[in-house]
Amino acid sequence: MEPLALFGGPTSFNRELSPYNPYGEEEVAAASAVIRSGCLSSFIGAWAEGFYGGPQVRAFEAEWAEYFGVKHAVSVNSLTSGLICAVGALNIEPGDEIIVSPWTMSASATSILIWNAIPVFADIDPITFNLNPQAVRQKITTRTRAIMVPSIFGYGADFIELKKIAVEFNLKIIEDAAQSPGVNYEGKWVGTWGDIGGFSLNYHKHIHTGEGGICVTNDDVLAERMRLIRNHAESVVERKGETQINNMLGFNFRLGEIEAALGRCQLKKLSSKVQDRFVMGQHLQRLLADLPGLATTPVTGNNGHAYYVFGMVLDTALLKVSRAKIFEALKAEGVPSLATAYVNVHRLPMYTQKIAYGTQHFPWVIGDVTSTVEYGSGTCPVAEQLQDERYLGFAICQYDFTVEDMSAIAAAFHKVWAQLELLR
Image 1 (tube, helix red, strand yellow):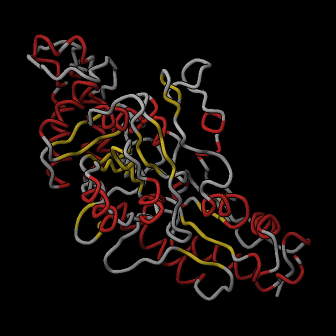
Image 2 (cartoon, one colour):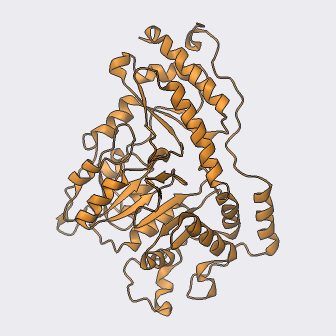
Image 3 (cartoon, one colour):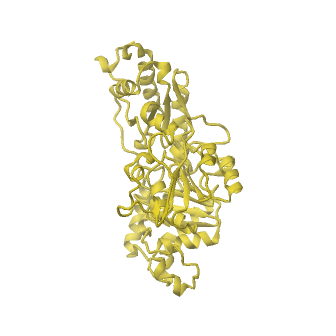
């Protein structure tokens, strides 16, 4: 076998890659048509004809709702905005608690803080990277109002167990399906298991509008409250005749007509784009299956995978090689899009120091009431060990990879594993 590139041998992967781009001429035509129409947005922040947006926005929402089999779809300018709308729609009070994963984009948790509620981080499963239902159960208190459930990396969370917990404790579920569009879990779309689900449309997702997001729900009241929060609610509620005005704060989270037109084109491609990624992810998984000390998320018949990220877990005790050395060897072989860390949100300074609004620890301190929720190292040991020692991620979302690319990447892994002794 050729020497490792780390020690002067040839690289295993030297293909030229193009950034992932799901766009085609249909998107160019759709965007051009909107520009020629002169209507780039019809939103008005008042109770008037334009309150719900223009023709492209309304059509996009209707088509998204039909695709996912839900009553309502509410477009927003990002899923960060969408999650803020979702939390606010639930009648959250300052000091309330919402359980969330530490292994997610930071917006999952900050959308809770925006409403002066307290994010409570529950640990994750060491192989799926999703919320561990038993860890969620252990975090429930009298202040718990909801569970924020990311389906991370494109793999559906354990909604069967999480729904049982939600029913038992009368909790709402918000799904952060940013990375998991078009994934089927137990015969139902990820994003439609909760009271509200949200999808991201930013530039490196399976389908995208540059920036954007969309939330779905079957609840008429929640849908309308999200639409109000999206579009300057405080200026609208009186004329609209809304009497439930809690959390009706003014934001501009509106999606433009060009983005909506692009979203309509992209939605038609969702199934094929997810399937393409699934084929590549499964191919890579099969090729890596016989490598000792390397585990990947098992994909079963009842849970699909969108492979936004191909997550791996190293058994460094078995391998007797540190993650850092393995990462260095794989990078030298030319393997692109590798990362040794995702994020441990609960260890960010905002949480460890409990500093968000001002300097007096609000909302963890509200008047004479001080929250006892703990953050930092030791509170989510599985997520922390993955971050510090064992996680290895491959961002399939980054480039227009092919199955042949996956074979070349797998060959690099096999080359490194065959010479692990040299890395010890």
